[in-house]
Length: 175
Image (cartoon, rainbow, N blue to C red; front, side, top):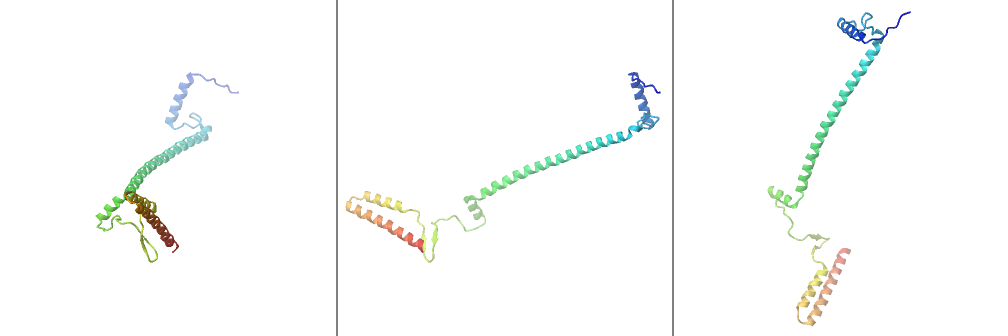
């Protein structure tokens, strides 16, 4: 039977020398060289695993680079969108609209009169003063007058005016 060799530190140098000369001769796997022929499939499999690992790492790196570039583009577009939004909000102001209309030579301006409600056949100007302010003004006029008889008449007149305006408003709503 064959004797088993024991491993020694002195054999390491001889093995490296033998491996280097086998590589230079191209007999790294042959029976004459280091006798790796029975491990050849394992060597190919290991090479394939390392190659796949390196290739996947490169693909992942390429994908992450694209993601970073797209993120920069998105940030730029968000800034552009925000600037456009600010410009649009600025155009909504009445003074800006009026300036733009004047630059274009338009005769349209801001309204100067009170709005008009157009009904079936009648035109009615909407008055900003409500009935309570009319009564208050009438009472102030009464206080300023000296004659008490005139005061009573003015109060009655203000109240009848108030009732008449309410009646006309209710009639207008019914039509």
